[in-house]
Image (cartoon, rainbow, N blue to C red; front, side):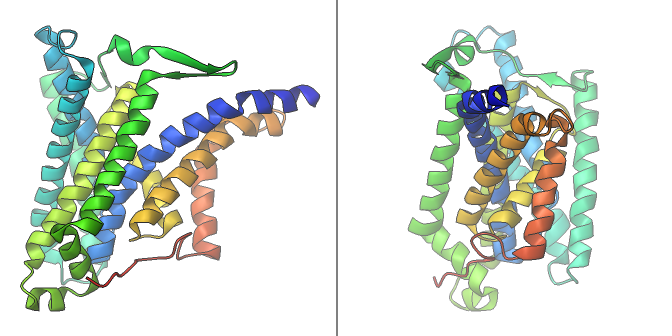
Length: 325
């Protein structure tokens, strides 16, 4: 027992770091769910595929740079920024296209109908990605090319060392979350988004183009998902057309955990869920004598969702926040 306690303490910093990285991933993806819900009160279940499209765009650009010898020739920060911008642009434009084709015509329909449409788009995008990659690469799993600098590790303590790519993921996620905060709270676009979320009819009477603002909301949410996809690929290295499904469900769980429609809630929910999952994966086996292992972390994550829905359905920070514009 003493050895178990010592081991629990020794691995704590590493588990904490893993949870923070995973939590920021979930937070970035969850923002797509929560922004759309905040404006339309609608769950975009195709967002997990929009997220993984960003990852595929990232890997294709990296493979293209590698084939012409520029992957090692260009400074690695420029390569990462280029890949992030491309992934964000592709996912953002895809989200706008999905909204225009599959959701806008159903905007005034009963809520179940656009929900079914979202699920259909999700399956369609999964198979479309698989078709494109099988024709283009003749491969199901795609491996992110290695950038040697990102694999360098720094020893912070005797029991914790951190890789450059982990630091890149954390810093990149924090910067994007901060940028989103500024956009929503300090710009005219953000004011318009909050006005449309408050009352679409009144916003229209005030001269706001509601359709344009809703498209911008999808664009921003999709771009955040695309950035998360690129960071996911860089961190974990292997993706396939179905890699977005489980992270997407967990990000939705994070959005509900924090308070669906609440942007700060999505960030908090993502971090809380990431930390809970990391601790469950690492500590369950030790605390249960091997009866439960890391394979139960998903059950743990979705159990949290069930408990939140039962005991605090509004989430940790409350449900949709309606701010006066």
